[in-house]
Length: 146
Image (spheres, one colour):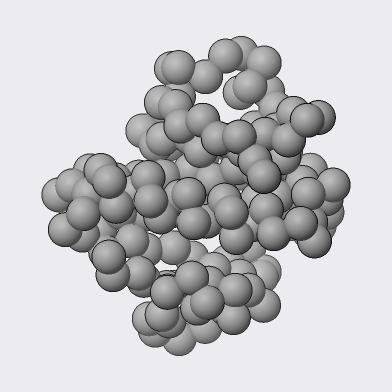
């Protein structure tokens, strides 16, 4: 079971910002062999959901919920040491709760790597549109309705 925090960017400690960027870099850029600009300039506008185990940050997602348009969940990632422990499901369930609490009248959108469609479908998301390549990786746009 993970311990979670939800923070604005300014509420994150310097150490936690480092850990978030390191986790995202280690998985999205190094492990997936996909060089792309992870630091995209919009992190200050998002909420940051961090999941911790006894060794520190192990799961992360960023959340955008303005309560004026569809909400978004992005940069969903689990450290290798947390895989096979249902941390991804726990992270996403918590992300959905956090977003729905802040914007209950709007759908939640995300861009899922295509190999994870069954996982996101099991959480209540459904596919919108055709498959597309994002940084050379097949993705599908998905939506969840509270």
